[in-house]
Length: 426
Ligand code: HEC
Ligand code: HEC
Ligand code: HEC
Ligand code: HEC
Ligand code: HEC
Image 1 (cartoon, rainbow, N blue to C red):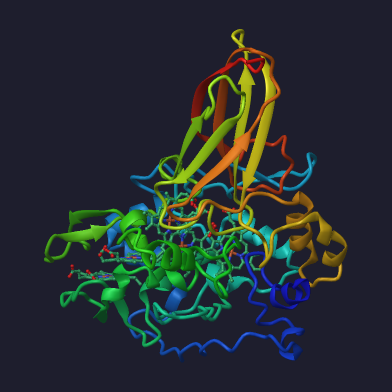
Image 2 (image 1 turned 90 degrees about the horizontal axis):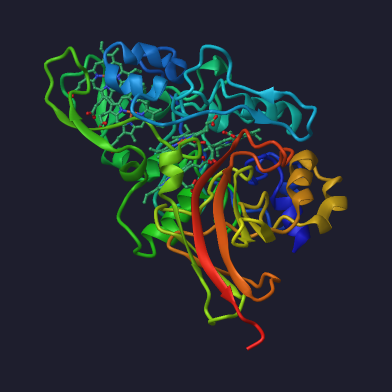
């Protein structure tokens, strides 16, 4: 089992398709090749292709640009994040970057992916999703999503407007027929479907619990299971009525806000999970905690294996004094098996040993809460007879691998209490 993981799991901090790992070609269980990326025709309107600066599109599409570049209308925030030990310096956004910009706009400036590439991946090319070339929208039924080919030049531009809108044929795709555009456009209704996000928000095959599964979690656990009809855009790109190009004679349409709030948004995080605490037997100190995914169309947390949610509980007496505490951590696994300290020695032999080791060092933890899932946890705090309060809070951590005393990148997302009356002697 683990041998399979070793061969199949290598390359990325963020995944695991090992497509460029030398070990893979010789391994008998190597996955079938994914379809080759399409040939790319240069765009006649935008000769720099996906490296076309977003501001050039923003000259005409002003409101959309303001959302993408400045986060206008969102509550995004990029706190400094810390590396692994106390003495490391805090990595912050470069001066002049909007602190509320959309994550796509900062994909080329966010110091985290860049640092991870240098420190954990020994300068391996991770540019396929952070700086992609034009890609074809994948099929809903794809077993494995092909990686977009990387853009070698102009990486500081990150994910531009053209990264999503330019087709391999060199045209600009949008959800509507837009005959009045000064550039070649092509209407593609799949722009409003989750497949539009699949290329970068999924990698490799479905492995429940693992990182880089967001699209597959949506497809298999949420849409496929009949839990909802929302596509990624319906939750992450809320629409409004306006012209898409302010100075042109074009109709007012339902236009999607280009904000994509996720782990950097308190509003978004606050809507994902609900917690119910119960004392199932009167007078007994046993507590049940039901953690319910009520708001996300995929697992929580999703995406990068750095993300974690802590459920921290404590029992306090009438004076507010803490008597017992318990914590659970929910996080995606790094590879296709649970992170586990037992593998630390094996990790040293891996090509991606830094990333694998930091995941395994944390040891076993709870898997993410899947779409629609209600996770039931139990706890029996050791307290004497008396009247208490159980306090619980859910905390989101952007980077679970840093020194736990560093709280700058953590955010409390909700808080709950339960009165607890214990009379164990009866
Ligand atoms: C000179 C002004 C101008 C520039 C520059 C420009 N556009 Fe447009 N674009 C327009 C106009 C006008 C339309 C037509 C809008 C309509 O019909 O509602 C349009 C249409 C579109 C559509 C189709 C909208 C739909 O409703 O489906 C997309 C997508 C688009 N542009 C993206 C881009 C991108 C990406 C860039 C930069 C690579 C860009 N545009 C650069 C003016 C511009
Ligand atoms: C991460 C991918 C992505 C990026 C980056 C992106 N867009 Fe879009 N854009 C979309 C999607 C998806 C839609 C369709 C939304 C929907 O279903 O309503 C869209 C729709 C549009 C439309 C049509 C109006 C609408 O909302 O339906 C225009 C115009 C447009 N985008 C322009 C831009 C410009 C200009 C930029 C850069 C400032 C940009 N986009 C960046 C994914 C992207
Ligand atoms: C071209 C690749 C690409 C496409 C297509 C794409 N994304 Fe992303 N997305 C990224 C990358 C890379 C990041 C992380 C950027 C960073 O943090 O540096 C990201 C970040 C995000 C985040 C924010 C995560 C956070 O940390 O706050 C959300 C939400 C998101 N994407 C949603 C979407 C949705 C919805 C779509 C489809 C409409 C989509 N993305 C299409 C590459 C892509
Ligand atoms: C029903 C609404 C809903 C749908 C549908 C949905 N999401 Fe989310 N998304 C959320 C919520 C709530 C969160 C915050 C909790 C979390 O991080 O899982 C979130 C968080 C995210 C993040 C943030 C991860 C991070 O590390 O910061 C990304 C990326 C993302 N979604 C992408 C997608 C993509 C891609 C799709 C479609 C395949 C999608 N979402 C569909 C509600 C939704
Ligand atoms: C399949 C596409 C894909 C590839 C390949 C990829 N990334 Fe990412 N990356 C993403 C997406 C999407 C996000 C958004 C966050 C999420 O999903 O949680 C992201 C986010 C990140 C983050 C977290 C940023 C934050 O906000 O904390 C880091 C660090 C990162 N990537 C580093 C890398 C490195 C290093 C590599 C190469 C080994 C790499 N990525 C390859 C798609 C990709």
